[in-house]
Length: 244
Image (tube, rainbow, N blue to C red):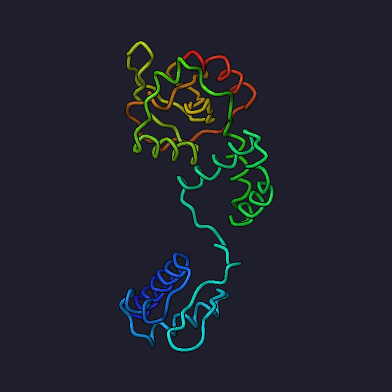
């Protein structure tokens, strides 16, 4: 019973933090009404958040409200594998683009993002970033044949890439022929806006590059793999990506 009460309180505190993040200013009465709790409970929760280090400012007097101090930051990040991939892709693309506008604070952002992950996890994050390659923009011929891939396939492919697991795909080549392949998604390669998987293809027994938008189905496998020599894989992708 105590465990359930603790869980309810934690959920309520997270909800309260979310509401304070969203609003520049809110009264205790407004917050209590929205959360469906008494003013006494709301004030107790505010006190708990302050004790945990959350800087909540309060205006005095009738009608006074509360807000997070403007210097407050999100603190430690909690990301699933899809969010991690998205974050790594965004940082890597910003680095590769080389725009002064994007690079002004990138070093500090990278440092803070790295610090946000658990210490034992940071090496894994660095390894993942090395497996994300950004090349030249796609040719007009490739862009004209590009169709955004399905969310379901993207989610599964991201998981396979993140967890270094083999995946069975049905792949439609440029001539419309569909083949089933068991692949190891070694590297992600971007010729904007088209993403490719640089893989070890068990059917061919060799390195093969696949356009993500041409993967029709994907099935995650329990078997894992080790990452190969990036120079060999990337050289193969440079040769084949513009032809797919």
